[in-house]
Length: 406
Image (cartoon, rainbow, N blue to C red):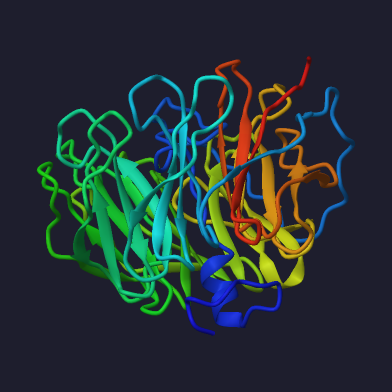
């Protein structure tokens, strides 16, 4: 299937793999995933056995959301990002658009809506997007991972919601996602991508002046597709957790604090693993990872041991073809919950966590058609976790505000 063809529900497997399972959190990756202890002490972890547990009862209160509000985005949006791109304190949205080879920037209007999208040219089939201040001018910039042209497009922002023409930097073979973090401790944001075709990750160290060092490649897994960055073993250095679509696992690459990463250690997740969101789901102080299992309509949680390892998958239900995972405390009980957009049932599955490693049965929340990605953040500043999805078949984004407790 050519990149210019319209995405449909009957897409070929290769396009499903690259389009449906991108995803992004606010700006890039959060410094502290939900439910994470920040003491720095190594936790005493609890790792439940693998299996398919019975759902726990729904909590009181359950999370509730206003109906989805759709805003025009781009042609086959593959990812979604929320960040303040014009310095007004409101979160704007941006999507990389797989069919039209561009990026759509939606500036918040301050009234709960978004202006018509500003369109920025990208490379071929952009599939991931991240934000950061890459030239140290105090303004947010954007970087798109172009899966079809094996490069990154860097857009320097002017602080008012406008962006310069993109600069192009070579990346890996089929970059499917982009995450911006300071990986080597020099206070400048770097970029790391999982590479679907190269089965590896690419690290590009930023110089703080709007450029990157030559890419460094590290083996990951078969069909590296989704990636999160966090200190997984408690040594104060950032590690990588990569979900691998073809090999059905999550691999961990431990970092040395200087932007280099060791060999991958694989942990089975399940068929077509598509997501690597991190949170502490059982309140033991260790980060756990949750992945969507696209082909089998399931969610897999791998509980962390606090040393950079994970137990076997605990399998949960979802909608039809879950394509990404996000985490947040949606009902305000202090425990991390899971959200997963389902590409073929046009909804999001919300799984309430009980803080002990258990989850209630999934609750369906309607969104736009063909959602491949989700972002969790507080859009209206009320202290509640909201979310938005990229709707690749509707060429929109759906914004859902949390109404729990009125």
